[in-house]
Picture 1 (cartoon, one colour):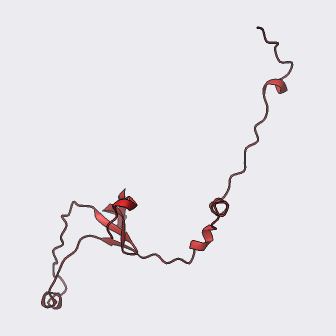
Picture 2 (picture 1 turned 90 degrees about the vertical axis):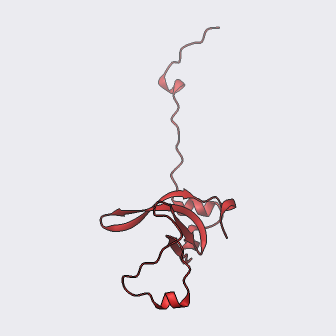
Picture 3 (picture 1 turned 45 degrees about the vertical axis):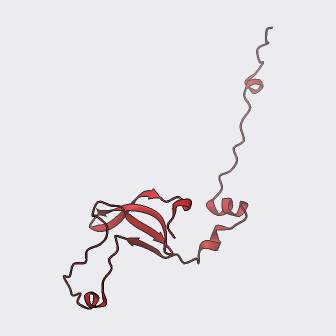
Length: 114
């Protein structure tokens, strides 16, 4: 079976019509929830280096320069909490003389500690 060659470029190539790119707002709105609803939502994010239990006497004895030992080793990842719930773990780094946190692990919701 032999094919006849096309007579012009328009017989072989058809222009493809790309869909316009949507903004995040448009994508969220299409999903049924405008992203702007999260504009006023407060979220407390805290970074936990470790924990320590102190008696009231030990707490009152703290002064400038006091050292409090934590329950984690220096090389262990820190916990990242959102509204008191563990969401990730990371490591403390310094960039331009500022403390930063590099996210190393996002905690799966089924493994979160409540």
